[in-house]
Image 1 (tube, one colour):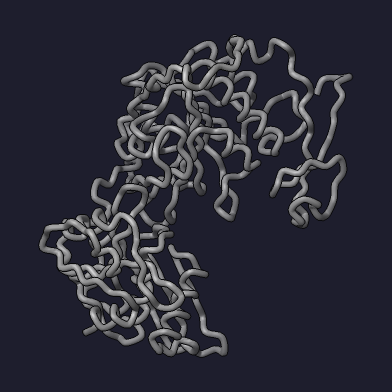
Image 2: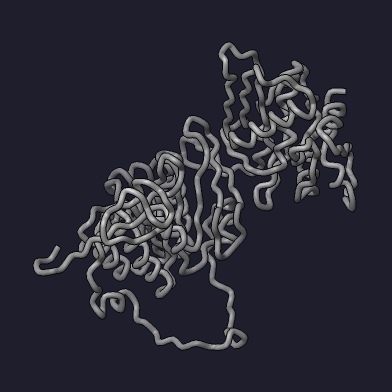
Length: 459
């Protein structure tokens, strides 16, 4: 901090953003305890500091009917799964935030993307703040990456990074990671709320004013959210999350925000010794190790964005040796599964109050949509009765508290994907059969209640 420079400290609530001149144990706005963190207010920027990045153009209000809309230029990354999530490629001047657990493949994917972009679209700058250039080079050699248009630099000072960008004028900049970059004028440490917010704001201004696309890698907290202020996700144009357990080879890249394309789209990758490999048919790969005639196993056609995905839901129901039966879930919401087990017990007379129940989505992926409700109930019933579900059946449908089976969206896409993988029967909500134009060999069995579904599945 320069001598004579006045520093002002305030306290900001991490939950709601409430700002207070002094620390408090409880936020008066959102009533959360221990949510205030100290933030050093940045000193006033020099009048020409942002003009050094790019000249500001005068703007004035205009009628929306007279605004000339032109299609934004896009760069094809060469990774079709990534291009589809982004809506057809990288939009010039966009800012993309990529989050995920350590070691899940964020740096690997963006390094592979940087290589493809540098070969087709010109210079790419990769700022490896957490690794030395030699470590990054070693990873690049393992991935078979070597391009004269791909530049790497180990730097965390934002002012120096901006100088490099002005010097090389790259088409795309990769920032690995945003939590390690700092602005020297601020007194707080890298990764603090003030540093992350200010650095992301300056990089976003740079992208919008110059047309340079910027990718920011973000750390995540133990709850799975991107570390730092929530305003970071509001500032950027696109937010991508890497999902999947590190001990499995499957990786899901999910778009939770996208100003230039659809949201909730997913891309499926497989981690190999030579980097991330695209999975063209994820349903077939996820079901490749499904056991035959095993109680508690059922296949459910899910819909992630516009992509149908067949997953295997497994359940294990056993006698409890303790007073309180255990309930465990992997890949599904715990509260939702508990509710469905209560519906199964109340509406179908299954005695589960003294049984341990474990539910899992095979492959290490996470599913959160209503169409899995009937699949969870059928898998639990199968394990309870020790009766396997036919390997030719798929089950889907939302289940209400009364045991009724409700309609789900995208039914045609789910049915077509099920038929493509060789399934013979589909148990689905009866209301979905109305106005359904489908001609194929897949037998459609409509049900209106979980009792009907149990009769159809188990005879």
